[in-house]
Image (tube, rainbow, N blue to C red):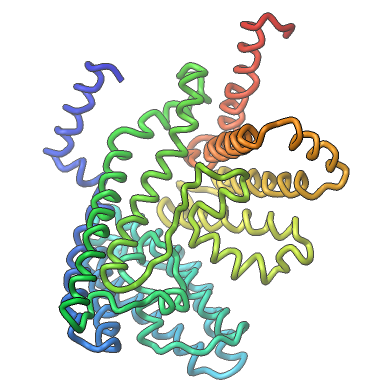
Length: 451
């Protein structure tokens, strides 16, 4: 971006700030941060109460935050649903309770078909996005509790613990996706101090969390200002609107844009949660250091990966039986989970089944890459080739090559993930052609190789 273009962009942003368009674009995150700060301050003020009182207070604050962030009809509906769901599991005996709770979970999946549109007009300009993100997280937490109680035989939790975990306001909108068991296991004294030494210790721990909160806000705002501005143009033209070099740069930009924004949301949630006395799971662990696609998914959206492993992959049989099919099933389920989120925002008319193919293609690409890596590691016919590479290539070069391959593949795989619903999947094919075949052809010509 040259100086003239930067000046034009800055003037446009300032004009948007003046007329309210900027607030509309960023209202959801801004509201989450502002109301989250208010809720966290009120939660810290509950410190003199015993743990039971604090947790009931935090559960009530979480319902209040739902009302302030969204609407009080939504807050009431969410509370009633959670009470009914918990009651079916803990108060209705045997198979009847399982069937009733499963029916409620199915109802939450289907709610976009019958929820009145008036209920999705709330206190944020992005009410549909807010409720779509929130119900994606909420549904996973409810299903996890159902499986934990009725299939795994884990001891029951109190209504207080269940409500707090499923509606916990720091993580309700966009995760991390913590189950009732995980949140309960991660609680610590937090601001509930008993001595001056405890207070000093908590204040020392709070300062880095405030810094992390500011870092998270900065990430989301900077990414919104600068990254992803050419997405629609590049998708609409199949990459023809830019040079091959810029197309590769844009591919990596998709990766970094998503990482910066998503990790920024997680930073804010983790900071608020830990200030309140809950050791929220980290959601990202330097994914760019992954040496394979499988390792990438152990470093990216970690809480979702843990959920998929515990509640889908292992119940299906893990790697003990039908391992390859289970991997594909997990990635297909992940794609469909994202489809469900988009469907709640856009509706079936604007997001027909043909538009779902982007998420499905993304899931299959990653699933097949994980299986290919397994085949490379485990195929006996490749033992000699692997041994030769270990002997002839130095370890740093092998590590660099593995990380580079994983980084490039994951970056390319994000392309169908971000495909706008009004643009066909064929445009992804055109972009892939330009990235690989056209670029290779030009490189070969410059090197004087026959093409």
